[in-house]
Length: 202
Image (cartoon, rainbow, N blue to C red):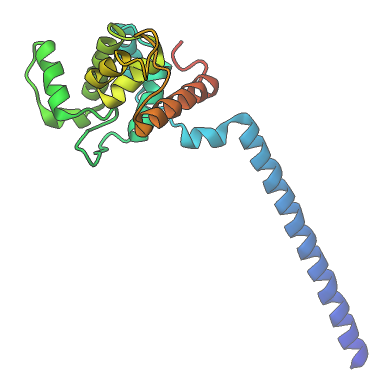
């Protein structure tokens, strides 16, 4: 009986060692897979999703915009959620205020439907129109982004203030911390999208 117990104990130890070795092997394989995903950018793509490519490409071309910049703005504004609503009431992918969207619709000579702001093509079209409107009035890109976030009247005031601009064109400082952080986030997202999706827009 003692001999049988010793043998059973030995077999149990062997099984335990084999199980431990198998778990270690699985852990190593999982670690290798994770490293591969990180290096290949697949993990970043879970965060920086690229959706509505056709709409972004169409309206970026129509309004002379960099599609990667539009994708970055969509990422920062709404996290690519078509039905996103901000606490202030901004809607859709590019987070347009209904009042701004109604003004844009008027400029385009078409009726305004607030429900359409959660429809990707309409939201991206209006957002791209507005970006083009800002690019016609401001340079460089970071100033345009500040205007998209804070409003073009606010940015015009900053550019006319020596405390924020030395040349009336470039902002040396953004007085709104939220807007300053917004510009930084879009810049980072822009670099990510260009790196992760180099062939997305031809």
